[in-house]
Every structure is written in structure tokens, then in C-alpha cells.
Length: 181
Image 1: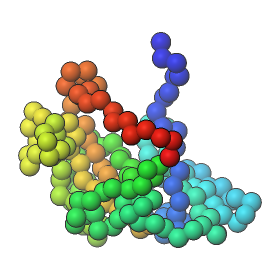
Image 2: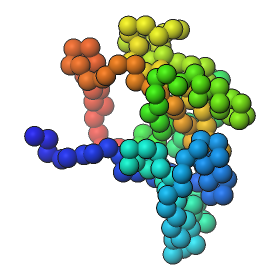
Image 3: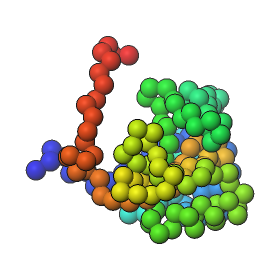
């Protein structure tokens, strides 16, 4: 028996620069339902969107929030052209929404039609480069990436096969760099 009975992600909380713009993008562009709104004591807000399976994506809006730090606390928006998705330790790199494999290309086309800049379809694979041009037996996820209006990197991802095979999927030891920072 596992030590903790985790049942998925309850919610992931991100920070919005403009809550009205965030609500518009996530409800009208992505079609999510707004399921909870909270007014915070400092004048801020905390809103939740249904992302399926009882999970939620939440956003805070803080009146005195520090400025965004793309390339440090989040992926630099140029990443769609450069492929450089590095962010600082402890940062949130991207949010990947699970979608049906049969809908990947359709959903990509829908976002393009709505004016959202998206990456080409990527087939994440067990090869040195990490990707193959067409899905094959080495592919484990097919996906594409795009940014929300606040520069949060999002991904629509579909599992091509189940993950967790101890021989096929667990091939690398974690790198230890030492220290506590």
C-alpha cells in the first residue's frame, strides 16, 4: 500500500496579471468552465477553472504582485521559436493538459483558427533528441505548446502509450548536484 492515497491534482495555482483577460482566455478560447471565484482580503482574487476529472486550474490576481520574470520564473515567450524552455530551479515550467490522442491535430487547428500561436505537433520519444518527426514505436506523448495571455506555457498532450514500465521508461538515475540551494 502506498503511504499517501493521492487522487490526482486538486488544483494548480498560478498568478494572473489581469483576471478579466485570464477568464476570457480560459473560458472563451480554451472552453473551460469557471467553477469558483474568491475575493481576497487584500483586494486580490482567486478563481478556479474545471480541467476535468475533478481537477482545477486556479489563478490568483494580486494588486501589488511583482512583475513577471520570463526566462527565470517562467518560460521565455521566444521559446516557441528557439526551443529553449529552461527556467529557474523551483519555478513552474509549464502546464500540460491531458487530451485524447485522436484530437491532438484537431485541437491544434482550433487554437490556430482562434489566433493562438502554437508549436508544430511534437512526438516525444525515447531517442537522444527527445522527439521524432512522426509518431512511431518510440513515441510516448504527442503534443503541442502555446502561451496564455500572461506568458504561461501550456501544452495539450496525449499519451500514446501507458508510462511506467520499469525497463522501458525508468532508464536514468537522478543527477545529484549537492548542497541545499
